[in-house]
Image (cartoon, rainbow, N blue to C red):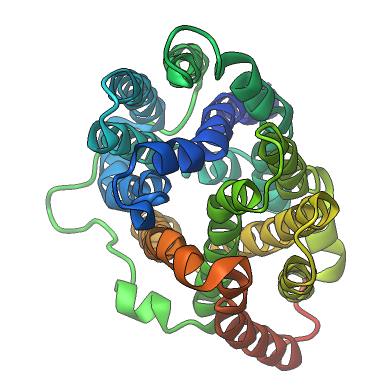
Length: 396
């Protein structure tokens, strides 16, 4: 019965992740184009999307503290309330044609994401050690539902009402309310009452944890995955618009991209168990390098679909590989601070890259946006190869 309850939690986290990702993908599909239309300075066109990652990075550490203090269930419920507020503010910004209000609404969606980033770790906590990679993969696989729901919801709602895109963002309110109902059913970790006599275990310092080579690779893998994916996803709708593709084409490309991101999650955990986490991370890096080759060799619809699908695959292997590796490096009493530091660093890197994506595109074009990613990929590749050589028999 206890095992059933644990996997029930994983299923509920899967569903709540699907609802959030539907909202997130809808925003990614539309915010670049909407930002381009509303921004007085076109270099700021991708700012609304960058604000998502700013909101996420800003919320990672506070969310960790909140989850530890009030428990995961109540903390996740609070996250969905922020999601409701995000939809309301974004909708109002579009109605008023205020670029800055719209950007704040996007930032609030990022704050919501700051809580959802702990879904995968909550799932891992809920199952035995041998099943952690599978639980993480399964929760992330919820994006497959969002891959269809997000772009199609964007297509269906973007022309409803007198103001284009307004009802698209209003739908975030409804999705967040549904997510509130789902997470309220969770039976997860309750607040930990630590002893007040100084006997509580504090664990190692964060500095000591970061010195671990596996921590470095886990952090670098996730950061690389999000920076490359973020740059690609942020600039693709704008680039396709610039190359003269039909207005509904970016939604189709994003749909295939998201499928690439999440569809492998149904078996990535098993691949990690069979081949080891280092090999999966190494494969993810090679896929991202392949993405750049395809992206810079043409600007046709097929190039965009293929490139974005492959960058999704690479993201999946790097992110799940990095997340699985991270669960091996911390002790129970070190969990919150290690997870918070990891995701804060990852989303800070993504926020910076997304902020400059619009300027890079305006000054150097689509090829420039992609080629600037090569140094990061090369560094991550070198670290992964060294880890593989150092411990080729590692079995996660």
